[in-house]
Length: 214
Length: 88
Picture 1 (tube, rainbow over the protein chains, first blue to last red):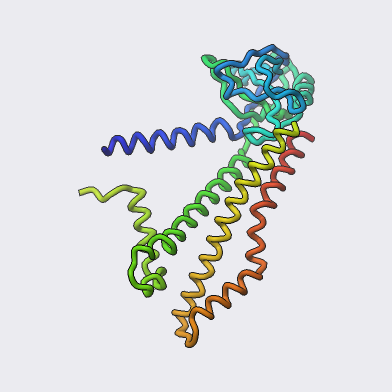
Picture 2 (picture 1 turned 90 degrees about the vertical axis):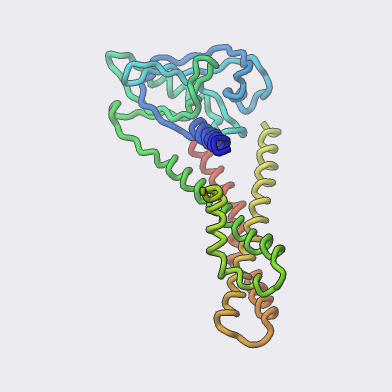
């Protein structure tokens, strides 16, 4: 039974981490070698593609997609798609794919005279599913060794943690004030909720950790 | 475009409304708990229920309670900032 519980929590955490890793922005320092437009027939991998540009018909399956082909400082290639996210998920509200493509084309360089750029993107590259990370913005940097501090991700993760803590606190309050009194006979106990609120928090922690082991 | 924007607005409004209601209930509950606590700690005489009722009435008119409307305001502002920063 213990292994079932471990597996369950492992799966839950893996899903959450995977979701955040896919959705949150990441940055790579690369040099752009080419930009192009390819026709794509999105199929079973449609989860990992956005729709056509915001103003156009949203539900076309076969469409042209802009791509930005880049090389990492290590020499490994990384190809981005460049699609509007529009008003959908993830909430990047990216409406300017065409402009981004123009900027990227402007920054094309070759290996002899490299021009390093930071590409902010979200998503994963997977060769088996034919999926590409979606580039969100580009800007030039001085070299491939510039140190990037992910302030945006720090802010987002702290806000998320605060929301989770608030929800947890709200649940504890609800339990303490609305559920537990239902199981108490006298009104006096209800008013002394605070006296045993510490114990209650302990109870939640115990529930979280599971029953005490013999 | 209008359709997906409307869908986002409706969904967002629904989700934020749920949050608004939950946070309102939570905040009021915390306030009530604090009033009860104060009554008990300070050994006050008289009508306990009335004391709590008055305290909550004061809370209902307070700025603190109206701050909960930030649940709607903040995400909309974040969204506006994001749209501007991403595209212009």
